[in-house]
Length: 111
Image 1 (cartoon, rainbow, N blue to C red):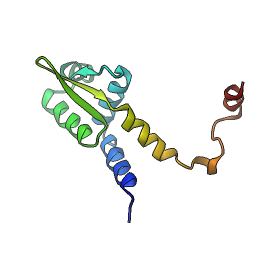
Image 2 (image 1 turned 45 degrees about the horizontal axis):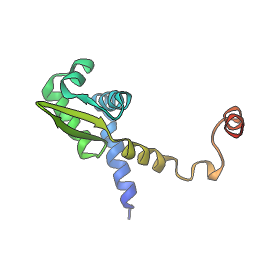
Image 3 (image 1 turned 30 degrees about the vertical axis):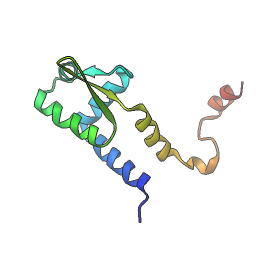
Image 4 (image 1 turned 90 degrees about the vertical axis):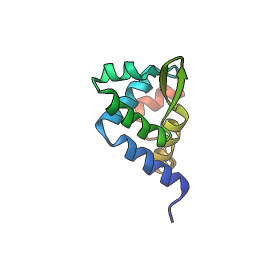
């Protein structure tokens, strides 16, 4: 039986496994915690509003983005805690507990 963490990771990875959703998520990550209005996301990605709405709803259901209202605008933002949890799940027990970073990066981390 799969763990809850595994099921969540599969859902989030599946959500990102589509070019438009991945582009929207990357744009929101770049925008930072303040997020972006839906209209601006659509303009930057050259995506019709109905298509964008579909993809953002998918990312919301997966828990990767949040939505808030600001006046008449819907503001979307990446959920950085969810993103970090997904990365953490993927790298849990990475390299048998040894550092996977190249030697020169490890040396800089020690210094």
